Amino acid sequence: MYYSRLGYGYGIDPMYILTIIMALVCMYASFRVSSVYKKYAKVRSMSGLTGAQAAMEILRRNGITDVAVVHVGGELTDHYDPRTKTVSLSDSTYGSNSVAAVGVAAHECGHVLQHYNSYLPLKIRTAIVPVANIGSKAGIPIIILGMFLSFSPLITIGIWVFSLAVLFQVVTLPVEFNASSRALVMLEDYGILGHEEVAVSRKVLNAAAMTYVASAASAVIQLLRLILLNNRRR
Ligand SMILES: [Zn+2]
Image (cartoon, rainbow, N blue to C red; front, side, top):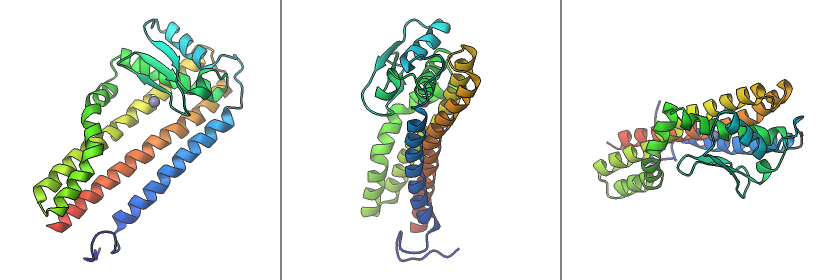
């Protein structure tokens, strides 16, 4: 295919178009997760357990006594922090007995179990957090500086640094899918949700997983584009 030499983004650059499409896909995925969540946040679970109660029940069933379940502000801010051994559940999850809330709470407990079972992708993910943070902040500025100075080695370094952030996003995928599948099995096995309710929870968790897939795909495309741009400069 012919690439215009008119500079980056002006010619017919399929990678540029793909980058824009992926940005839209990411926006759609995050819009979808909140709309799916809102829909099933209105469906009360038959057991009547809240997100917090469901989380505590799952931890108890697994003999985990040193993990705290706490309330955190914000929307869809639920997470598990392995350093502080805390499951943080958001406003709409902690005290709600909806099928959506219980599903999200169980997903966070899925991360707790990954931590306790030394699940390899989680270990890798935790190990690369510091470098990934540097990569996501410094990667692009280093590349831009390299382009500005027309200094190729700096651009190459920037691409390597940025690829650490991309690696992090990719390693996040198995971690997220695995946490959800653990959650759904436990919800049914422990009788926290009925069979049909588990199917509804799966929809919510799948919608959430799609946001991770979209942003990982978007990051990979961005990285490929940077590599191609750099090769064309030479
Ligand atoms: Zn997760």
